[in-house]
Length: 64
Length: 355
Image 1: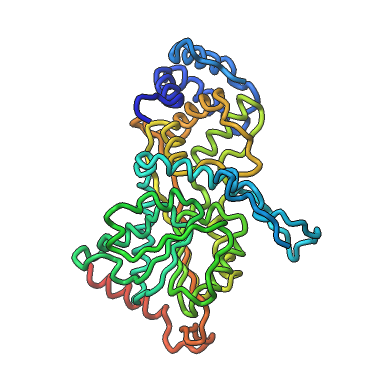
Image 2: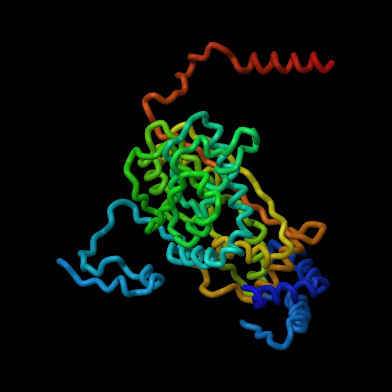
């Protein structure tokens, strides 16, 4: 729809800004991807998420 | 027993959800093996309707269907015949009809492919998607009839009525594939081909694996985000079971590069190809998982230029309805000529020619 930014587009734009944190997280998962368990890379992910929330702006509602 | 029906007053979307008749029946065990229901037809239908309502976005993502439909049409033209009555089963936005109005890639000057086809019946369960392009100019160049199916798993056609049945990128949403293929076999005239293509095997394995890894790390388990798909070796068995002869099955990988995972997902949604597995987790993918998957995709499968490839594996299948007139393989041991000798001779000739 014209004149309306879909949330997914804002999401993608914010994701593109965090490539450094993102690649750190990706590398952490890939280091041993046959043995991934819950919160394996939680520190890298939290850094990524922080960068993300900053990029997305104040209206971000993080859902669990 | 005549009952007064209020069906006409219910809005169309809600009407789809209601059973057709409110007549009480005895509960009976259905004969034969019960069908396992994997995909929700209701949900698939709704996704397609919604996607097609935005005609612009829906046309933008026709690249995959057009390309596959075009390759399917080339396979149809390989058969040296005229087809007076053809069915396009699961027509989506009549992509096959549009591709038939273009000239063949092998002989661009020979005129449109549609010369070889008479009447084309395009059948699909989603009305909006089927009629999306009904006002475009290509409709006047081919004798296309649109037919909205009430369900994509029952074909309301007479036996022995079609000279060919085509199907492009819709069979992968069918629950009971053996039954649909057997019905296709039934509506074909003897010695007529069924040419189909479906998404299969390792399609979208990049998306599948990165979502799985992301969910494992973020949530500690996996849920279904991509459909289970038929494999190449299943397809031969399926066609054989449905009673087809002279089978040909081949595989074609189409790799599309996307800027990021979100573009891939948006395109899939605009195609109406979002997840419709019944056992899927209701609601969208969690944002945590989405964020993690995007970066895992990039790290695991990303190209050097920063784009992310997505593989679509197409399985093409050709089967012929049996007929007594059809060419049959000769009996074992009746060969007069050894292919081994021939190939060896040819090899020697080539070698001599090079030296």
